[in-house]
Image 1 (cartoon, one colour):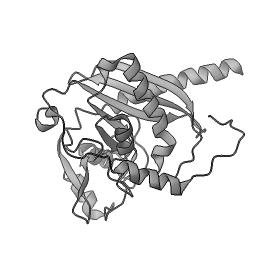
Image 2 (image 1 turned 180 degrees about the vertical axis):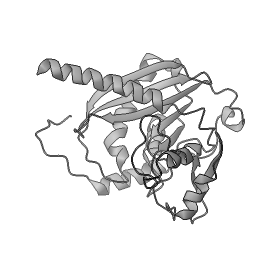
Image 3 (image 1 turned 180 degrees about the horizontal axis):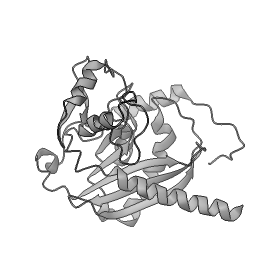
Image 4 (image 1 turned 45 degrees about the vertical axis):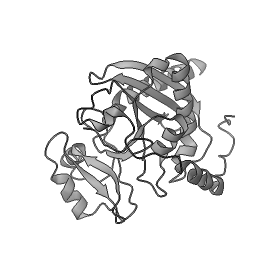
Length: 266
């Protein structure tokens, strides 16, 4: 049940959340399972989705939960769902899914009920996948609960498993030269936890005065890290699959409707 804005935030049940993460993590599939994933041209991929929660400025409890499905490769909007929601769970680093995933799961359920034929073949999620403190970020969480192949898309590097925003990392970003160029985010464990792409380099070029992973570059999200989630391990050419921008547009529509309603109430 949504809480009123005057009530204190819920206390985070970290012990229970950690146990649930561990249980759900056992269901993550990191190998390619779909035929289109095994083809370098992604033949057979027809629908990609994006999911995100966008918060009302100055209010961390009112947000717009958005799910958008696009055609591929034309990237035309096939379906969009924007719902204003009240978020009651607190934000705790490493447990973002318990704050946001329930609303995105509901959005996926509405899609299944309304337009099952538009179910995305892969879903890009605002957040991390296996690049996570316990290897189970919001993209993995959402993938397990919905059965959708998910990729986590994050604008800041989460420094886990030895990954660091050091000079070597900055040099790798500077070496990116053209669309489609990537380099693996390999932890000290030897495991590849994600990929950094060309927009990381473009972001640094345009914002030389900002530290790596600093101010958010806006709806286009030039600073991206693609992290594997449920049933998806091959990272596609990200310049063609950046479906979060339409998701942000959808969220902005929902936020504007919310502001209009509030103005009328006032």
